[in-house]
Length: 270
Ligand SMILES: NC(=O)c1ccc[n+]([C@@H]2O[C@H](COP(=O)([O-])OP(=O)(O)OC[C@H]3O[C@@H](n4cnc5c(N)ncnc54)[C@H](O)[C@@H]3O)[C@@H](O)[C@H]2O)c1
Image (cartoon, rainbow, N blue to C red; front, side):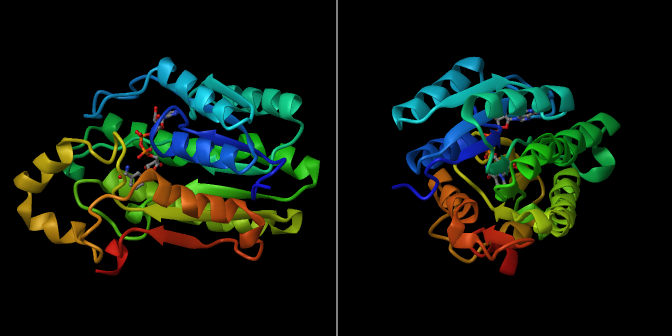
């Protein structure tokens, strides 16, 4: 018996990194997986490579290797119609929707007065409005099914502590905290819990973006903002984050809603 036996989860940004890991770990616990990923470069401001449709196919195979079903599609979290259609088809195939992990995001760097308007607005569109659109696509079906559920919003350390050279990312990830808390209040009567998680560095293509090292050497005055407590773990593994996602998705967290769970090696405390 897995802790998510018979449940269905919808995950955005599922082609690789944390999203893929959450899909595989949830499938191992008994969940079928609906998922989307853009599988293409979102903006030339990003300085790490984008995933491909082959990466998405690999995630589907890894889910199926756990004995569960996967419906994974190329879609952009900025496209409400596409998200709604994927959710509709997923529920048609798998019969229900219990868990949402709003995980897709991008990350890039600049001091705020050196950012183009486009750098600001593209990141806000994906990282903040994209989560709004993800939740909006999923919530009506969850309410209608009447099974309750769990929504996990992937924020960041930058959602509880503002980071330099990332004002747009910090603004979006702080915005997700407000979105999470409002949604938790609105969805309580439907037994749908809504929580945010706040990782610091994670070993994924985003978390190993080579531009971070350039930023540290260009702006040594900002280095204190990047300190943590558990310095033996400069980067978490995707599994460290999946453990938190599994907990919040499961009935073990049945009394937990509206909360901000940091998984940040203590970085928010120094
Ligand atoms: N890696 C870190 O160090 C770190 C730290 C804190 C928080 N986070 C957050 O964790 C989450 C997962 O990031 P990751 O580390 O796995 O990065 P990643 O780049 O490996 O994965 C993110 C995925 O989201 C997808 N995506 C981006 N824009 C999209 C869009 N418009 N529509 C659909 N899919 C889109 C990407 O294609 C990619 O597959 C993100 O919300 C990120 O902000 C990451």
